[in-house]
Picture (cartoon, helix red, strand yellow):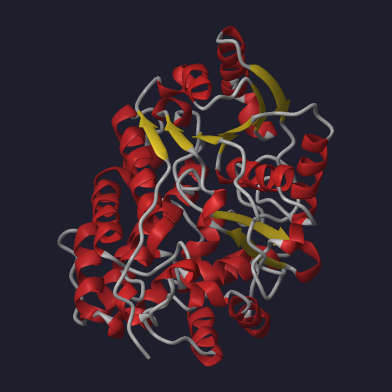
Length: 422
């Protein structure tokens, strides 16, 4: 088996800085867009940001239709509702997403299904869906994040809950990547502390997982037409991940405790962008694979700060719950890299055994920013471990990027030890 010698890197166009969203009419005109669908959710709509953007676009000669019923943590049903809404419009030539990962991922699904034949599940990753590739290029998609965390503005992935299967999965293809990411830190200033904490852990796990991912050169060599966007850790993704961790180390706690700290908010927005540029090419592994069943199988817990009702474990929170134990498991694959990550995240961290450095840095941060102490606080117990393991094993695309082979027993141990992180 020949080893891979090539890694790939791709990213959206990027515009970053306070006030960047005020230039959207210019950006859309440059993409040839004169009639667009703006996708957002009720919570973001209530901030007034989408309305201001609509007014700016219309003043700049862009015709705008608004879909504001995005479901936080999208499901196959909510995505289909958005697609059906978009299909009844007269033709649009672009899509604009304003919001967090839920709005951006919903916009990706809408864009896909406006251009591609068949049903949504045709494109959902196997084995949950059919895993088909979009057969054609999509419309220009401009992503305007209002939270600092998901990195969805940089990635090729649309994440969703499949309700009948009680599992979270995704659609992944290079054509889903937004054409342009417009990151305006001013749009994140109203983000509640709990949302900042959860979304920030998503940033951190993006950076850590891409940094500790299986190196690209350890995969079997592929033909050019077989290569996927997630190619494993590589020199370019490493650079982005390291910079994201450094920014988080200096600003994450401040952003949670003082939401009005413009410098901390700007650092978090930049860290989210950098981490997205890294993991959008290297990929993520065990914590994200575990997060999908955690979010999909929750029964009663609902995080504060999110609109709507019913059970909800936000994505970043679900990723964080098993992160300390996941990195304890992956440590042996590359001890130096795990130690380096701990030093970047928590300079001066000390432990008797180096394997504990990164888990300790993570649990101390999670406790400081007010996250639940573990899966038990979300309502899970020992009897839930088999179903959680099954849900994680349904994410082979992610588990294949783990720096160590992951078996069911390994996942069971990680889930069991994550019931109480401190």
